[in-house]
Amino acid sequence: MLHLSKMLFNSFTFMRGLSEFSATALFMVISCMGCSVRDQGASGNLISSLNYGLATVVVMHIFGFISGAHANPCVSVACCLLGYIGSNMMFVYIACQLAGAAFGYFMLLQMLPQGLIDSCKLGVCMVEPMNSLSSIQILSIEGFLTSVLILAWCALWDVRSGRFLDSVTLRMGCLVTVCNLAGGHLTGASMNPAKILIPTLFKGNPESVLLQLGGQMLASIIIPQLWLFAYTPSYRPLQIETPERHSSELYLSP
View 1 (cartoon, rainbow, N blue to C red):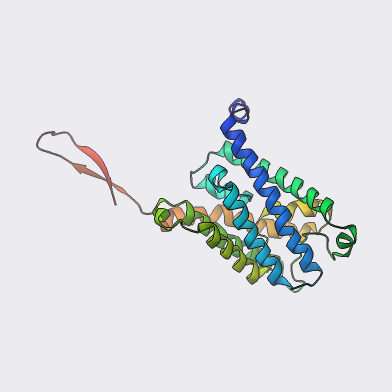
View 2 (cartoon, helix red, strand yellow):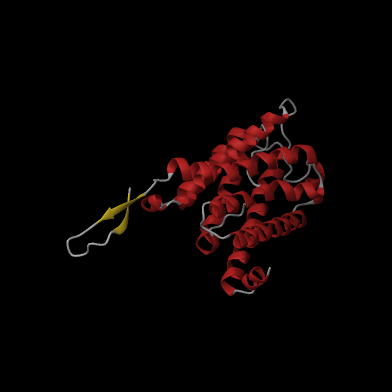
């Protein structure tokens, strides 16, 4: 607890936390505006999917070099499990993301006309799975789509991808758009606990939300382990003894 309190008063930690707060707030405002338009039947799932993907591009471009612009608790959990941030920093990230999502959603409600808010069938930015889907199907679809997102982040963090970082924000935006197009009409394809949890606090179906959150969190835990054991090269110690030095020295080699 003392270590965590010291982190909170660290200017570098504060800057990263504020970045996650701002990124998630901005993401909620931009992406949920698209959802409110979709509820009006403007252009269906296409408009909101493009809006969702482009919102990802915006926050990654603005805040990516400060905190990574996770704007998603699942991404922060995966980042911690892969060892790129500590557990204390992960909790700071998640707290700031949830607070930022609440602030962004509140600001959105203030900006939208009351007539538009009232005309939304479920509520602004609310997603509801297709009625014909079973519980296991909802869990599986949301888990699968979130797994694709987490795999993309794992690839981005991997040091081997250092040569392929050009236009990475656009590529991540395209990936989010594709996932949303694929599953938006099925489960909503939020792939983000903050985006689905905050609107639910105002109005929603707790049962379906738990299924969506369950699939998302399972993906954020399982996929980093899969990446470490299946897609990360293993190294073994190699002993080399030179004529000058008879003692064995350890080197890492593939």
